[in-house]
Length: 299
Image 1 (cartoon, rainbow, N blue to C red):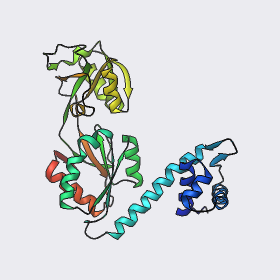
Image 2: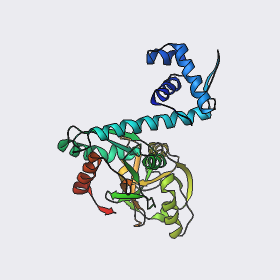
Image 3: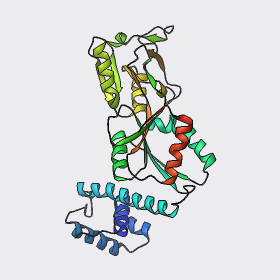
Image 4: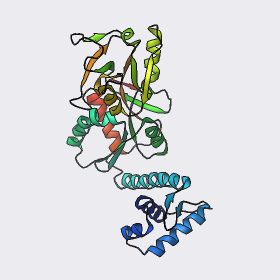
C-alpha cells in the first residue's frame, strides 16, 4: 500500500514551486540533502519520476505536474475539513470556498459578499478564478463548496440558484458595422460578420443563427472573456456576449448593440453538489443569496 503524508506533499510542492531543491530547502528551513532524500523516497514510493534534475536542467515530469495539482487539492481539502470541524455548530466562523468564472468575480460577487459580511463578519472567503470545467471538477472532489458559472449547464448532479437573465449583445470597434444612432439590431445583421465568441456560448449562438436562417462566421472561439473584448476593440470582428460583460474593461473603443432575439440570453448561476454536506457558513451564504438575489431555484 502506498502511504503519502501531508509533509511529503508540502515538500514536493515547495520543490515544484521553487524549481530548485536548494531554494525549496531554504524556504522550508530544512537541510538540502534531507529534502533531496525525501523527494527520492517519494519517487520510490510512487514508482514514477517526478522531477528531472541535473546541473543544467530542472524539469517537472508529466507525473510530477499531475501530483502538483492533486497535492494542492488534497492539502486544500484537508484545511477545509479541519476548518469545518473546528467551527461546526453555528457557521458564524470558518471559510467559504468559492470557484468562480472571471466575469462573476467582478460583476456578481462583490455585492453579495459585502451583504453577507455585514451579517457574518467573522466568516472568511477563498475565491478562486477558474474555468467552468475546473469549477465542476473542484466541486466533485470537494475542493470548493460553491461554484459560480455561466449557463447553460445541463446536469442532474447540481443544485442551481440563478441571477437575472442577461440578454446577448454585440460589441464592435468604432461603429465599424452599425450607425451610432442604432441601439438594437436583428440577429441577421451579423450573418456576414466575423464573430468572436466564448466557447461555452458557441452552441446557443450557433443555434440562434441557424434558426434565423444562416450559418454564423465564427472567426474566434476563446475561453478568456477579456480577450474577447480586446479582440473586438482591435477591429478583428464582432463580439457576441452577455450584456453584463460591458464594464469588465473600462474605456475600450467599443460600441454595443442589443440583439433582438429572445432565445439569445444567459444567466449566472450558483451551483453546488446535490445531496452533499455543506458547511454551516456555506448554507448561510446560500440563504442570504436566496433572500436577496434569487431569480428562481432549481432543486
